[in-house]
Image 1 (tube, rainbow, N blue to C red):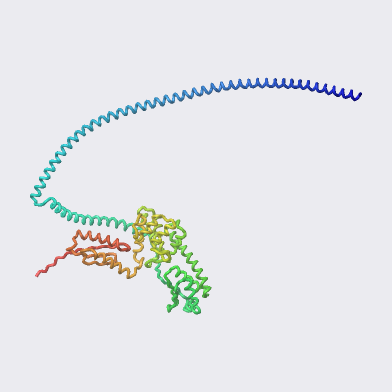
Image 2: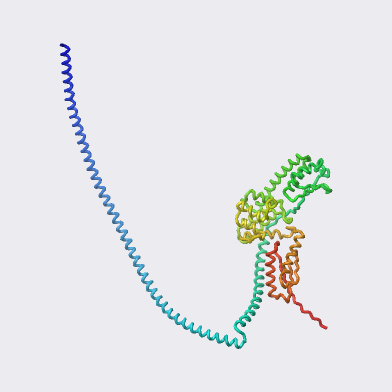
Length: 520
């Protein structure tokens, strides 16, 4: 029974608890709903306030924008009105000018119409006069033909023959005068420039041949140079490529060879061996290597010296080396490096006198014979080889042109090329600068006389003054005084086209008429 009472009590308590919980839940919901409504109401009020403020700010901003817009419109209106006024004034001014021009054109048109009428009248008058003139001329020609007994064509031929004779005479006189004047002025200017250049330029030239002589301290050294069974001399000749001539010449050994660089290596080697005193194949090989290095240093030094003396800078190292090789190269007995330096200096001095680029002229003069440094290694003329080398090492086009044209193989295309050509001729033609073989000398004189004798009317010709002058005797009955002037000019042109020569050749044509009688 107690248990049942307890269960009932618990059940009642549980029911009461559930009912109380439900009541409290309802009350809590009402309270929270009330709070939420209060918050919502506050937020709505705040939103209304914010909206009101935003509307006020928008209204004030709107008023400001409208004011600014009105001001801007007013300004734009004033600017446009001003532009319209200016354009209206400009249009009015242009209209006035157009009216003035129209009036001027009208006046000119009237004047032109009047002139046109006058011209038409004059044209008719001239045409009428022309017709009358032709009629009169025809009558005069008929009358002249009747009086002279010659037709028009015969009269023309007669006049042309007379005019041709007169013109030929006048042309010969004019050629003489022009040549005399040109020679006088050109010779004077050329002599001034060349003399100035030569006076400022002085160069020493070393006479080199195909052999070098090495002095010996005594004749016993010859046996040591030859060595046992000729081993030493064979080793030396093999390593250097130079022939050693050991003959009866006292205290001297002759080195013979066409390659000057190899000959210089052999000379230095032999001198070192003589000083050292130890002469055997191993020592010879060592000294040859040292001599080659020494010659290479000399080549570099000579190249640097050439560029320093001429003031030519910025050359490729290989070009400087090639210049140094020219130190050991000769042409007609003239050292090519010294000749190149001389040509560079002469060309530079003449360029300075003429107002041409001095540096470019010196550069072209220094490199004009660069092909001679390797012409024994590469096939072709030194001109072509030199031009190819200049192109290879990015030299100026004027320099390449000067190299190609310095012997007259092609026509000079620049003043620099002409100056190099002139400087080369001056350096070569200087007395003592070059040596010419007897055979080539005789051939040149014979060719000169042959050219002179090839012209009609030439009786005799003589090449004199080492080929610097040719005297020509003409037949007086075949060649007139006027024809003699023209013949001289033609001979000069043919010599210039067919011969190569340093300096200039004087062509002296002589026409002589003698009358001889005897008193008996």
